[in-house]
Amino acid sequence: MKDIRMALLDMNNNRVNQGFKNITEISEAFKESCSENVTIDTFDVRFKNEIPDIHDFDIFISSGGPGDPHKEGLEWEDKFSDFLDQIFKHNASHTSKKYLFLICHSFQVASIHWKLGNICKRKSYSFGVMPIHKTEDGEREFLFQNLPEPFYAVDSRAYQFIKPDFARLEELGMKIVGIEKFRPHINLERAVMAIRFSEEIFGTQFHPEANPAGMIENLKDEKNRQAMIDSFGMEKYLETIDRIDDPDKILLTQAQIIPGFLQFAKENIMKQSEAMV
Image (cartoon, rainbow, N blue to C red; front, top):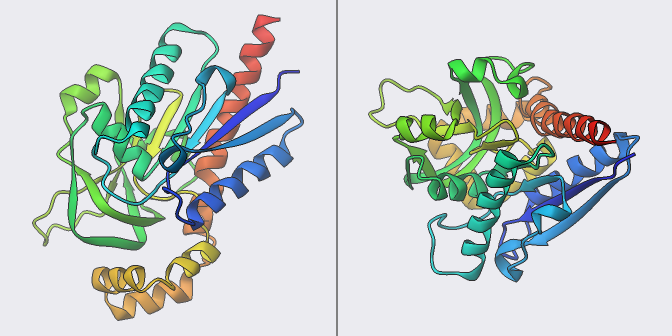
């Protein structure tokens, strides 16, 4: 029986982060649920310039993180760009695939690397439990199939992806599957919130790994708390705190998206392994 090898890419630049803790917990729960032997290794991408060799692993989850997603001339940036290209090229030419999930900062960096649209700074920091709307392609996205329309997820970002280049997306075979809340009374572009980059690569601007405990921890940060009050108002903020552990909101999102991605990856990895025997 083939071992399943996972690499977790920490993009937090040596900052303690609740999101990466959640990613680790989801990965460990997946490991415990598998009859196959699952190994999990962690790579500190931005602080230690650590990038996994794609040939050593089957599944990669790359986290969110702070700061500007545009290149600043740092060593890790070119390494991460090469890593993205290597996975894309490997999957185009091999029957044994590599599976990659990109979250928030990683999603932004990849979208800039593949020249998919305008990734720019928001007028104000976004933080809170936000509705995510499915596009037509999103309605067919299997990772969203057990989620309502809209579904809810934790959003935490200073940057946004707007004005997608649809010709470029089509050229690369990529599909936008989630966008942020439609607000016709506000003259702002709706941000892209999730992309099916390929059959094996998926990414979200939001944080599908987040859970209520992590959300409450993040709200202890005054910047996050104020961003949420500015976005929704005090009444909505208090309502969110009251409903933060609703089973049909971020708990449902956490239970569906990354676990669904991992299960899909595992099933396909095992099929390929059996086919090669």
